[in-house]
Amino acid sequence: MKGFSFHIDNLFFSVLLLIIASAFAFQPLLAQNFITPDIVTYLDEELNESSGLVNLNGEIWTHNDKGGEAKLYQIDINDGSIIRTVVVENAVNIDWEDLTSDEVYVYIGDIGNNDGSRTDLKIYRISRYMLKNYDVVYADIINYSYSDQTSFEPNYHNTDFDCEALISYQNDLYLFTKNWVDYQTKCYKLPNQPGTHVAEYQSTFDVGCLITGAEFNVSPDMLILIGYNLNGGSYTWLFNNFQGSDFFNGNDTKLIWTSLTQIEGICQNIGNSFYISSEKYAGFLEPTLFHLDVSNYLTQITTHDDSKTQIFYHQNVLTFRSISGETFSGEIQILNMAANLVEKYYFSKQRFINIPINLPSGVYLVVLHSNGKVHIEKIMF
Image (cartoon, rainbow, N blue to C red; front, side, top):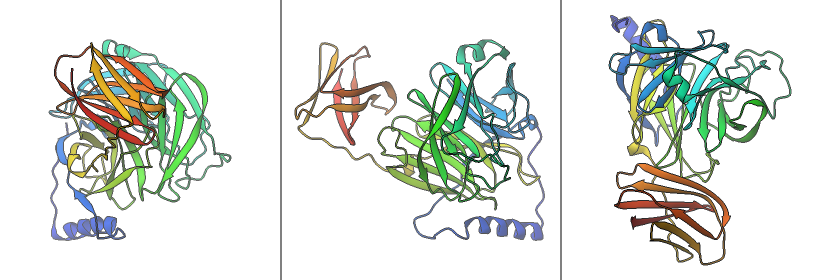
C-alpha cells in the first residue's frame, strides 16, 4: 500500500487554505456542524476509485468507479489491504457507484450517468451466500429507467439523472440522484426484483451538494447521505423522525467536513457510527477509509404516549390494541437496552396485532411507528 506523506511549503499551504475556505464561503455561519472524521486507514492503491461500501456481518466490501473491473473487494480495515477479490462474471462496470444489501442479497448500482444519456442503467443483485463462498459469482439484473426522464440527449455534468447513491429499505430499493444542475437530490423507488422496471419519483431535497453515497441505519431509523461540491467541500446529511419511506419529511441535519477530500462510499459500522471511503483526490490525497460517529447530532425522537393504544405482553405473545378503533399501519421495532434492533415487523390496517416472542428474558424497548406517531413502551419479556 502506498504511504501517505507530502511536504507543504508556505505557498502550497496558503493555496490549500483558500480551497477549503471556498468550500464553505457560501454557507451560512449560524447553526453549522463542522466535523473532522477519524482516519481509519489509507486504502490499497488498487482501490484508488473506491466508490461504494457495504458491511456484511463485519466484512467491509467496496468496488471501483467508472471503467473499473467487475469485481468486489473485501477490505482489511487495519491496513486498507485487499483480503478477497470476487469477480462478477456476467457484469460490466460501466459506472458502478454504490453498494447496498438486505438479508439475502447484495446490490451493485451501475447507476452512474454523468451526461444523462444512459438507457442501460441497471443494478446487479448477488446472493450473499455466493459472495461469501465463491470467488466468481453471477448476478441477477435489475434494469430500470426514471419515471420522469423524457430526454436522453447527452449533456455532460448538466443533468439531474446522474446517480451515485442507493439503499435497500423494506422490500424496495431507493435511489438518490446527483443533480449537477441545482445541487438537489431526487429520491426514486425501485423494486428489488430482476426484470425491467421504472424507478418512480418520490420526493426532492435541497442538499446543496452532489450526493455520492447513501446508507440506511436502523435503531433509530435514519437515512444518511454523503456528497461534495466542486471546490473540495464534503458533507454528510442525516434524516430521522420520518414515517415509512418519506425520508425527507422529518428532521434533517447537515454536517460539514473540515477535511479536504472526495467522499464516495458509506456503510454502517456499529450503532450510529459509519465507515466512509474517499477516492484518490487532487493528485496527492490517497484513497482513505474514514470513521464517523453521528450520535451527538441526532434529533431526539418525539414519542406519543396516549390511552388510545395498548401494548401488553402475556404468555410469549406481544399484543397491540387500538382502543379508538383507528387501525395501525407502519412498523414495530424491538430493541434491547443497548438500543440495538433485535426484531422488526411490518403491518397495515390492523386494529389488533399479536406477535409471538422468542427472545431471551430481559427488558426491551418496543417501538410502534404508526399513522405519523411513535409509541414507546419498556416491557419485560
